[in-house]
Image: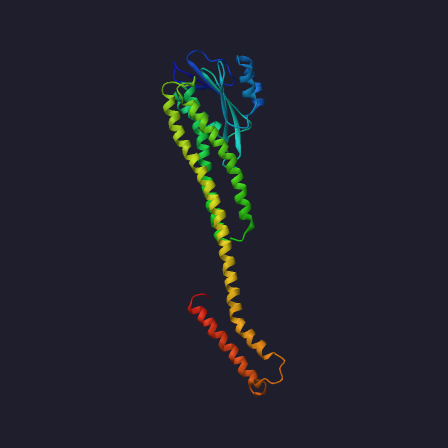
Length: 311
C-alpha cells in the first residue's frame, strides 16, 4: 500500500508487498483475507506457526500476542451505523505493519491520506501503530457520542409515553449490547497499555508518550460505557416510577369517586328497605327531597376534596 523511505522522507504507493530495506518501512492494509492471499505475503515472511495462525484467524476478543520476530494484535473497529465491531488483525514486524480486516472498512483511505500527507508518521512502525490505534479509538469516541444521543431520545420517550412496552425491551437490548461492547473496551484498553509499555519490543523512546496520551483518551470511553449502564438503569427506574405515579392517580380518582357515592349509596339503601312504616314514603315531594339531599352531599364532598387539593 505505502512505503516510507527515510532518505527522501517520502511515502510512495506500492501495489504488492516486498520486504523493506534497512531505511524503509511498509504499511499494508488488506480488506479481506482473500485480498491478502492474492499478494502471497505470508510466503515472504518467516512467521512462527502460532503467529501465522493468530494472524489468519480473527479472534472473538481483542488481544496482543508477541512471538519471536513478530507481534500479532487482534483489535476491533466500531462502526457508527449499527455499532457492530469490525475485526482487524495486525501483523507487526521490525519495519512493517500489515493490517487485515474481515471486510471493507471506511477508515483505510483516511490512513492513506494521513500517511501520504505526513510521511513522518511512517518513520517507525510504532508511529504507524499509534495512528492506526488512534483512528480505532476515535471510532469508539464517535460511538460514545451517538449513544449519548440515543439514550437521551430514549429518556424523552419515557416522558412522552411511560406506558409504552417497547421502552423496557429497548433498555434490555441496549444493556445486553453495552455489556458486550464493554468487554471489547476493557480488552482494547489493556492492549494500548501493553503497546505503551517500555518492554514492548516494537516501541521506541517516544512512542510510549503517544500511547499514554491515547490511553487517557480511551479512558473516556470506559467511563462513558459505565455511565451508560447507569443511565439505562435510571431510565428503567424512571419508567417504573412514572407508571406507578400514573397508577396512583387512577386509584386516587377511583377512591375519590367512591367516597362521593358512599353516602349516596347509604341513602339509597336506607330508603330501599322493605319496611312498611317509613315516614318519608308518605311525603308528597319526598323523591325530590332525597335527590336534592344526594346532590347537595355530592357537591359538599367534592368541594371539600378540591379545597384539600385532592382532586
